[in-house]
Image (cartoon, rainbow, N blue to C red; front, side, top):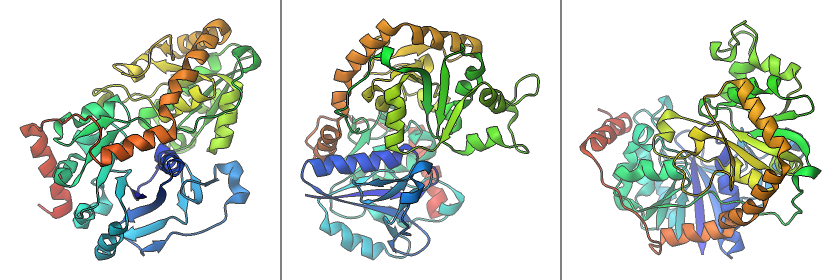
Length: 418
């Protein structure tokens, strides 16, 4: 079977880079052919800019064997095919006839300055090849309710976590919670007593990721416990900027939380590729995630793919209670350690320090997670995606409200004109 993965051109793809790459590997494990393409409304159609990034692996670049191109969490892909649907929609409609399934990794474009009066994307879905959309967040009702108007064209929605699944309850489109695919490792999992006393955070620096809570915690960690932070994004620049630092990222005494953390020994690694990320996780005791968005989490838990990447390497997740509230897949004390979102930085540090010392508890959670992560193996997830695309999975169908439909119509007017 031939499968095409599409992604609309956006900034800060973050985990979508890993999603597309790992899903492609899963499809290939099952014996299928896979291509990928970036959809855009400006520029030329054809192969994207090709550049050998092998010299920049230390800056986060890596060669992806799933999509056969260079990829980077911040910068995207090098050499991936691109198609301008505004100018070449006929070429798109000819192309999709060559595939058995289309997976839209970003479901629809969002309303931005670049998409004003851009209605051409609607025709992207106007073909007979089975297609599904992936939902990565809980923002559909607010940011892209116009997905509602594609319902007759889609076989289903693959929702990667509880918030994504529940937020789509106002769409009468078949949906299924199908979590992110992952590369499982055959490497030895080191027990806690053979690991460094390190706590790690790996993320794209968006406001909802709450990286500042990790940074504020670092100066209060006990001596001998270290902190490693990886990633970048808009909030990183607000933290480190001399001129544009946000007030949120200053302490009451006017000091900068970033400088305080660095002076206390925080090891900032920037963007890391998957190999370096896995090495960090395999050597560290704890992974901490304070992610929380009032809009996202109002629909349920938003567990990031980095949580599972840490679990695979035996690094025990420490998750905020708000992050994991109403989650359907993981159990507190069995798969992760809970930490209060609203506790002050000193209490966060104290709880992390206590978790570091309780190696027996860490070992038990490690053992539990070795079994838990098996359900996220890439070929298992890829097979579920295929079955969703061909109507072979049990799904749930929501019911639109009048309020939601009105919001969808307002959002669509951004693209088609009032």
